[in-house]
Amino acid sequence: MTEVTDLQKLITRFLENLEVGRGKSRRTVENYHHYLQRFNDFIEGKSPSKLTLDDVHKYQMHLNRFGESEAAREQGEKKLSAKTQNYHLIALRAFLKYLVKQDVECLAPEKIDLKKVEDRIIDFISREEMERLFEAVDLGKKTGMRDRAMMETLYSTGLRVSELVSLDRSQVDLERREFSIRGKGGKARIVFLSERCVKWIRLYLTERQDNWEPLFISYGRVRDNDELGLGEKRRITAYTVQAMVRQAARMAGLGKKVTPHVIRHSFATELLHNGADIRAVQDMLGHSSITTTQIYTHSTNPRLRDVHREFHK
Image (cartoon, rainbow, N blue to C red):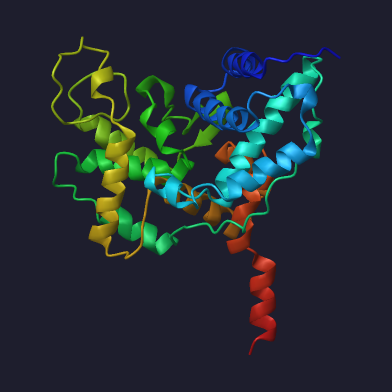
């Protein structure tokens, strides 16, 4: 084992490894930098070889009480949720695992336990509510056909909104009704389109009078002209999609918060409700861990539903 005392330099090397070696997004690297900098500030640059479980325990107490003091509130600091506290600890464990691989003497990462958090409750809407959402799109508007096609695509594929807005025409095979997408963490997967979804995408593209590459474009003003065939400045933004879904939910009278991610939840929930294998749903959603997909089973457990029907008269 090698003893390295400059914790700040080790953190910098770890972050560089995340970005270059492991291909993590800039947003992920920035988050890890924030979490680890907070830890480094707390232990005042203590050498990794000198770290103890007592140091980590005191740090956990610091996170748990963060933002509680009057001085902290005056500085605009807010109390950290259990989930956010765990993000700090996950970053610390990942950093220590990196040090172990680099033969740097340090505390064993597996000794750090995460804070227990409440089970996550998934927001989703029913198929009937989803149909009302579709019907709420005003096809008489210039954006109507595009919005309906986007909504159908979200529900047919379970795409994240970031994945939806990145789609190109050449990427989507309407004949085979499937295409590959590179999602979160650079993970590639195949997604599928329903016949109805393909119909709406074709109707939308028929209206288009351009050959720009983005599948879904913005109809707002663009200051600089694009070269024909590029259209990158016309690519729709995630914010526009989110606003469109919120507006459709209001027009449909759903009375609940609906986002593109809620549509993704609804996609997964319906698959499991209809008997789909959870591993298949995991692949379609692009989840790295089956644990992430299992949160959907809480609301789609057919065995519990059958037991209730049989015994609750």
